[in-house]
Image 1: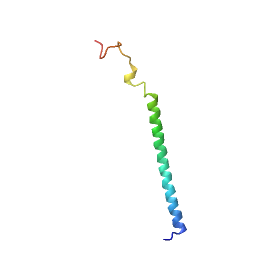
Image 2: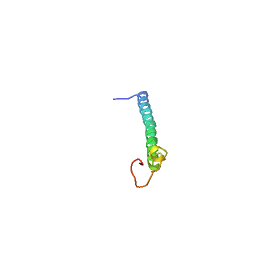
Image 3: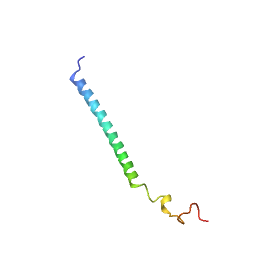
Image 4: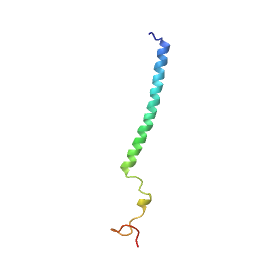
Amino acid sequence: MKITLSRLTEIVRSIVIEAAKEGHIQKIYRNSYRMMIKKASSGGNKNTPPFTKGTEKLGKSGPPG
């Protein structure tokens, strides 16, 4: 089976374009994982409701009363 130069060029270009698209998606995924790891290693968001108020009395559980 013979392939003409124009057909070979077309095949190579389509493969390169497809690989570039996959590389772009991989970059997005890599940045997403990097941000998740950064967030997990920082210990989360400290100013959310469970962390804004201290305990009423140490050693007691539940509402004071």
